[in-house]
Length: 338
Image 1: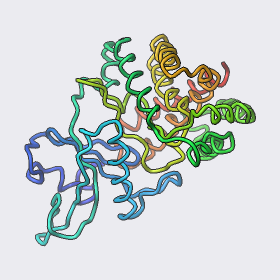
Image 2 (image 1 turned 60 degrees about the vertical axis):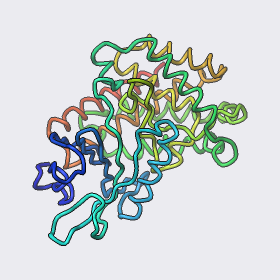
Image 3 (image 1 turned 90 degrees about the vertical axis):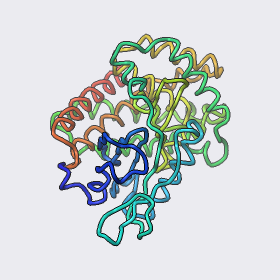
């Protein structure tokens, strides 16, 4: 999508003079649900007016509420990164401003910009991710989950019937993409059959509830949302739907383990899980790991399909997302066959 086809407020925010701080170099990053502007030492994230069923940003008030939730929830792990709510206002001169005096036309989240070279994905691609990084991650996560809310309403989301809502929804939302290059009918059938068979083991899920392993987790724990700089920063948790965040801690850490597998770092993935299990005294995690890895790989494949289908995404990004989606579906099929 070229600048002149962007929403008018985004076009305005791609000019340095809109910011109360130096922003000589501006970069817009598009996902299937967000428009993110990298502006100097800060990041501005705006939610797209979309409704995918599992998330609904279709009106301004819903986007405001979700921005506030994003700040609240992410400050659990990154209190010094999430700075506050930002308002985009329509000004009398026909332009737009950040936190101006005119009526609010959009809400966003303002964050400190983290060093890109220390992003976990960049460390992986550079071959620099090591065991010490994973040990630091385990320490942060073990402490986070020990303090995270659990029990009662949250624990119910660990039941097989509740987990199946998320898992089966993925299959429903990807049926229309079968045979279009990234997902074959055979893969779909194998993965969905495996998931349904595992979900039938209701006692296994109940055991996790009884052990207190269902918590208010992060929900999107993979390398793109982790920065390993002066300390561990884990950001961009799921704020838009509780049922994706209220989950077994095994589901959360399986996402990161799957991500390491995706990049061919299976040994580091095993070390991460072994260390986490030991730190949290969670011997039962192993029985759930493959299932949740499969689930998470399929989710990433689905997101790749959604992102590729967004008209705001550039052709090169679309092609990359389709290629990654195919790789994620192959990985999900691998877990289903394990």
